[in-house]
Length: 66
Image 1 (tube, rainbow, N blue to C red):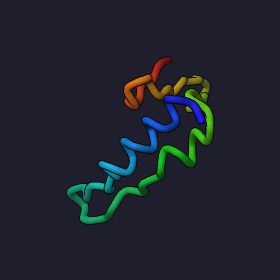
Image 2 (image 1 turned 90 degrees about the horizontal axis):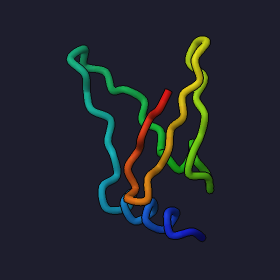
Image 3 (image 1 turned 180 degrees about the horizontal axis):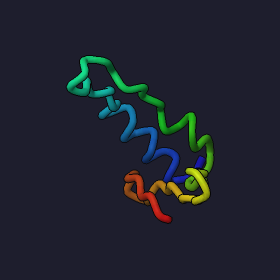
């Protein structure tokens, strides 16, 4: 297991994100980042005709780049 993976797991366990309730009263779906990334630190997201890169930094933060 890489240093990033253990740090990612540590951050997830400490502050598990909860879906915030928008003004309409319904909760947005909440997807665990471990489901998206698996054992990778970067994934590509297709949005329309654009491809974005979502990356986990060494500090466990997410960065989205076009």
